Length: 391
Image (cartoon, rainbow, N blue to C red; front, side, top):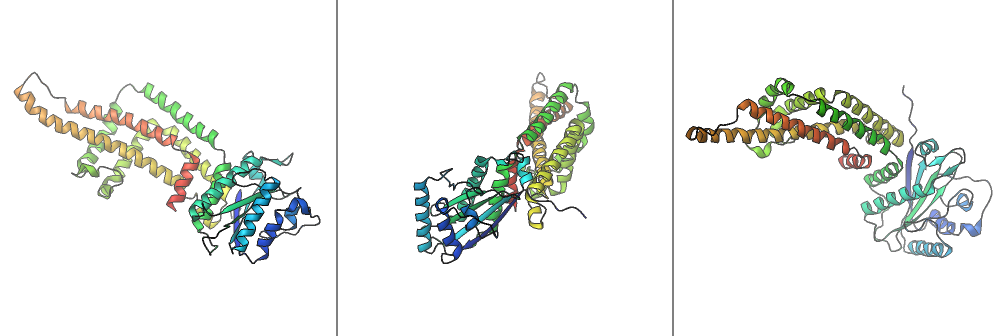
């Protein structure tokens, strides 16, 4: 039985109505510097704004979208807006973003020896997360929020409270996709994968450059590509607009197009692909560590690697199909030039073998460019957003 993975980030959320104690507790919490309550703390995960938040040794100053540290005037303003929201029967959304401290240490956010954290990074990811939430829920123009970072011997966490001073909605429930996107913003904002992606780029480009320099002939292409190239070419539909990898009319030959890609990769990028698989596996493990291995969270990354490889083969396949279009134009041009050369013996058409060889050479160049572009697109945040859109 495999060991359960402790997620690096956990998001828990609830909402309270204006007549509930939790709402009033938050309004009073804004004045915590005056209250300075002490004593043993008993805090449930959603009893957010009681004695615990009265202890300045355990929490950062309040921060908002615009301010890192609310001044006394700013706190008075926030408290006034939250009171207004309560009087107008607004819902209060209460979010808790909890971190595994060791995961924060791995991301360079937390220093376990000095017990200090990079508050600025946590504030920035909170802002991105809240911007995403407001946009997805249509609250950009009506809602305000404030937050604080909390220090605990077990887990560092962030409490966020959001209200509408002039409510536009009565329901407090938010869409599951909204909560998923909020968590993704936090994870992506803290994951530092630039070094790993640069290693991938350097590895591929270095090997590709050497492969190009060492390429002295196209004999292997004629031997390995020509039969399959022509087989696919002769099975393509008459409508050239359908010469795109994703068209259903190409379903019967898509496997053969993939075989062309595999042949190219095996010849030129065997070791590169081996390392690429390793790197993609590492990315899956990074996502697994960040999100955990719960049934819901697995959906974020369990198809990550295969989705990326499928996209890669799609790009490569389209590169082949583009060359087949070029080859087709050459064939049509050859037929036209046949009549011209018959009338004018001095004009000679290009031998068919040379035409195919030139097409295959262009394929190599095009495939190299496509491969390079794929590697450049291994941007973690972009790929994660793609995963979210696919769900």
